[in-house]
Image (cartoon, rainbow, N blue to C red; front, side):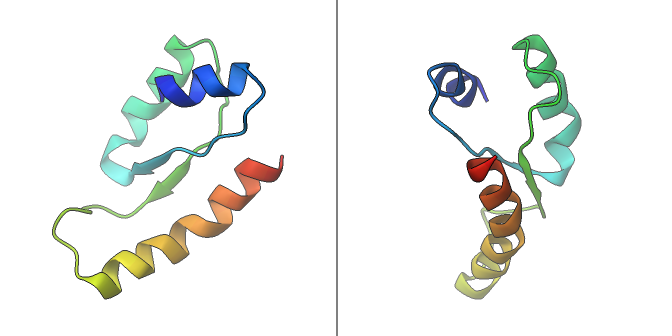
Length: 72
């Protein structure tokens, strides 16, 4: 989140992916970084143990959220 905040401040659009169990922490981080309301993509958890097909499903879950963030 810190890298995205730094890049966004330079005018470089970013998208951050957060799995659902970490949504609360990510929201707190946006507030700490003085970016309340910063949008990020929230996807299913876990990621580390997924098959290739499951990773593709997560990518499809993230894509509309990510696209929306990058073209805002």
